Every structure is written in structure tokens, then in C-alpha cells.
Image (cartoon, rainbow, N blue to C red):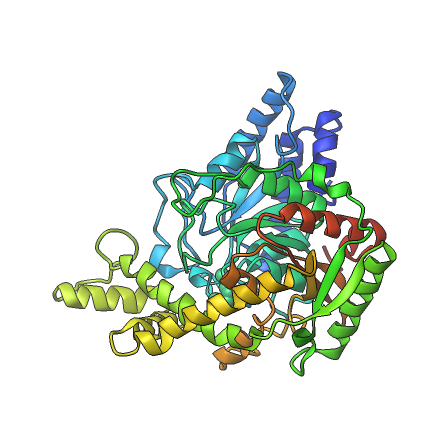
Amino acid sequence: MHQLTLAEIARGLADKKFSSEELTKVLLARIAQLDPQLNSFISLTEDLALQQAKAADARRANGESGALLGAPIAHKDLFCTQGIRTSCGSKMLDNFKAPYDATVVAKLAAAGAVTLGKTNMDEFAMGSANESSYYGAVKNPWNLEHVPGGSSGGSAAAVAARLLPAATGTDTGGSIRQPAALTNLTGLKPTYGRVSRWGMIAYASSLDQGGPLARTAEDCAILLQGMAGFDPQDSTSIDEPVPDYSASLNGSLQGLRIGVPKEYFSAGLDSRIAELIHNSVKELEKLGAVVKEISLPNMQHAIPAYYVIAPAEASSNLSRFDGVRFGYRCEDPKNLIDLYKRSRGEGFGPEVQRRIMVGAYALSAGYYDAYYLKAQKIRRLIKNDFMAAFNEVDIILGPTTPNPAWKLGAKNSDPVAAYLEDVYTITANLAGLPGLSMPAGFVDGLPVGVQLLAPYFQEGRLLNVAHQYQLNTDWHTRTPTGF
Ligand code: GLN
């Protein structure tokens, strides 16, 4: 039963082949048995899950239907869940029980999804390896000595190991697409504003966006449908109708114009990944797509710009964790300043402290123009490059990451080496565009992802291309040994 996708589960539940309660029990048992190897969950919510599963079964018995009604999922542990610990992977929030549900959590619960638990993540979503969590590193089910990617590494490892069919993630600079690529999943970062950020603990507010992680594009369509939509509680949410994503999956790719940026194939890219990307292009050509070389001339400036803007916003967002109102408070403070200093010094891990310092520096009066303002100008140039490219092509295709999953600990002493892994993903966040990563093959037994980018609000186009690709390839069906 654990091999079923969301789409298959929906059919099985509708045909009364099994109940949501039965399925939930099977998956909870599987998590108890296998997750100790992976560490993909921070909290399990067994009681809530069984209660939601029974309620979903009762709704189906009353004639209700819906693709998510009774479907087991999990939430990245930065989505607020009422009465349940919402840690953000940090000691700072280890004792924090959210007083309300995030909009995404509430919407999925209303659609009948069953929450099995809260998944592990890099502390405050800062990272590309899921090694900065207060709750310990997550292991990649394809090779337990390797990282699963981050920061949504817990969601990715759990879904890849078939502990559950799908999970939520968030993507500030690649944290849905990169772990999807490194664990052989399909992951989608929606257009900025498509999914509500209300109740999603902020890292860098102008870049953060929630989205689905699943094994197939078909399942991403189902989960995105439950997450997307206008939310008056989020001032950056966009009041655009949500299309039927599952209905968009069967379009022909005849004449689809695919742009492949020449800058993507530079020295930093593993040549074996480059070959797999070219193979995926050939596959799409067979389905009728037309391929064109394009240029994104300002791409080389994306990492420096992102690593100014994201820490700047983080330094501001994380100032609320001061040991006074909620979260961690140090023992026996001598005075107020000591309380602030030690609560923050003890509650935040080293990567979070590094980002706060970099961000506060970039925003300081003497350096604002030189760093923050400059980075914002680069951000606009990057957006303009995409706008020009999308005048010529319908989607942009390239690698999701320059390398496959690295060994645990391999980049710990060199943060910049880890930042460089984000080179292909962060531009979509800087421009606010939707992006998807899907399985494209293996290198040394480790999964490789191909990334597709589309114009604003064209999530349906991304899902359609990925679904057509998945109807003609079987990379996404491969299962890691032992799971
Ligand atoms: N690796 C990037 C960072 O550390 C992206 C993280 C994310 O998307 N949350 O900032």
C-alpha cells in the first residue's frame, strides 16, 4: 500500500479498496520502522492522523469525494499547526506550539488530507543539505551516507522512502526543487503569491513560497490544488483564479518551445548531469517540442545577490525571536541585554547566526547602498533576462543542481561551497517565477533532476510538460533499495 501515489490512493479510496484509516495505520507503522534510519520527521501526529482519517472515511461514506479526502501527507515543520510543535528545525522554537494553523495547513485539512507529522528541515530553512537542523541531519534514502538536499530535506527523504505519498515544502532559493532532485522526486515552487505564506514561518519574505513534493507531476497537481489560492491574510497573495491543475496535464507538447540557456553548461556542472539533461531534451523533442538555445546573461550575479537579499530579510524577520515573547529563553539572565544576547546566542545555530550577521551588515547605514541596493538592482536585471527569454520560448530547461547529493559533512566547513549548489534554483525566486524539478536519471546510483521554469502563473504548463515526460520515461518510478 505504501507504494501508492496520491492519484492511486484517491482511486482506491473512491473504489472502497481500503479506508483512509487502514492506509494511515500502514504508513504510521512504516514510519516507526524505517524513519530511525532517515530522521525525516521532527514530530509525529498519530492521534490527529487517525482522527482525520476516520473523519475522511465518514465524509466519503456520506457521498463526498475529492482527490485529497483521506490522503496522508506531512508538513514541513515551519507551517504553523495549532497546538502542535512548530520548531522550524531550531532550538529557538523547540518549545513552540503554534496557536493557529497556517492557511496551507487549514486548506489541506479542510480538503480532507491526513497529517502524519511535521518533517525535519534546515534550521529556519537555511541550507541545501538538511544538516543545520537542531534535530540532526536527514539521510538520503538512496544512500544513507549522503545528504537529501535542503531545506525541505525531511519532506523529500520521507516521500522518496515511501513513508508517505506527498508532503509540503517551501522554497526560498531552491528548497523544494533541490531536495526533489537529490531524492528522485517531483517538486514544484509556485509563482510568488500563488500559495499563502500566512502561518509559514518567514525566512526571506520576498522569496519564500510553499509548494508540493511528490513522486509524480500528477501528484504535485493534486497537492498544489489544495494549497493554492488567494488569502486576504497574506498581503503578497495574488487574487488570481486557481486553474484545475489535474485537467491541465494532458496537453500536447507539439510545437512547445523549450529554451536551454547556454550559461547553464559552464565549468561548474558535472558533465554526467549535463548528459542526462541533454537526454531529457531529446525525449521532449520526440514528443514534439522544439528546442532553442537562449541566454540569461546576468545569471552569474544571482548567487551574490541572493546571499545578500535573503540574509538581509532573515536578519529582520528573525529579530522577533528575542527570548521575551515566545521561543527559547536563556537561564538566569542578569539583565535585559543579557537576556537578548544569550537567548539568541544559545537558541540559534551557527548557520542562522552567520546569516543574521551578514544580513544586518548589508542593511546597516554605511553599507546599504553598496550591498542591499546593488543586490536589488541585480534582481531586476535577472527578472528582465527571464522576461526577454519568455518572449521567445514557452519553458526554460536545465539542470536543477550542478552535482548529485554529496556526502554528509562534506561541505560543512565551507558554507560558500554549499551556496554554489543553489546556482540553478535561486534565479526563479529572485524573479518570482514558478519552477519544477523532475527525475532525469542517475549518476553513481544517486538521482539527478531536470528543472523547468515557466512564466508567471504557468504552473499548469510545468505540470503538463513533466507529466508528458513521465508518461514516456520511468526514472520517477525507481525506488531506493531498502525502502
Ligand atoms: N539553500 C538556500 C539557502 O540556504 C535556499 C534555502 C531555501 O530555499 N529555503 O538560503
